Length: 227
Image 1: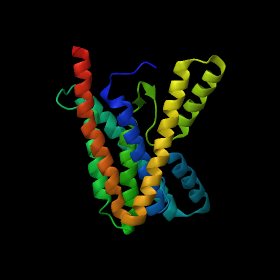
Image 2: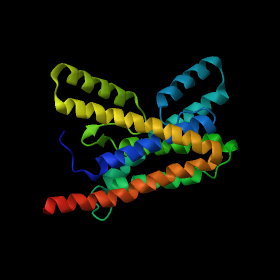
Image 3: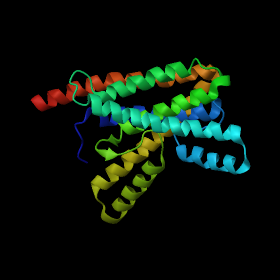
Image 4: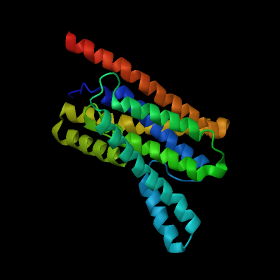
């Protein structure tokens, strides 16, 4: 499989972001009132059901995170357009450190402010899914699994018929991404049990590690080009 030299779509960073994606979804669902921070399909479904049932308080509970998710996507697009030519720091690094800072804020919000907390987490997920769209040159999502599961199955079926080694590598990559999402959810669940609302700080730390790793990966790419 041909690997991209883009710092932002390295395998290590992609798996870290996927780990954080699973963590955030577990945190918002288990600790913040059973709202999906990442999978807006679930929120939109529950939004429709609550509108039909006239449950207006719950309608707001699911509507605001969907709007926040869209705002996160828009912010990422604006940052990309404004800062993509900057040499000293990549615009995606600005996005990831912003995510980490927002999650730190979420950790200080009591459960009485779950709507605010879930909206901020959804905004972070919107930022992340728009900023990091690929892993090793392949389109992949780090905050949800439906598309990744589809691509994993397609590539594994391709290998079953053609025995193409590239196809099996791509299939395994998508399966690894899904597995790390599950790991993130498991780690999030464990942290919630012992740390409660402050467990989201762990997710923030994961993103900071990703931010730092982008400097390291950039240095490696520059060295390989010189060689």
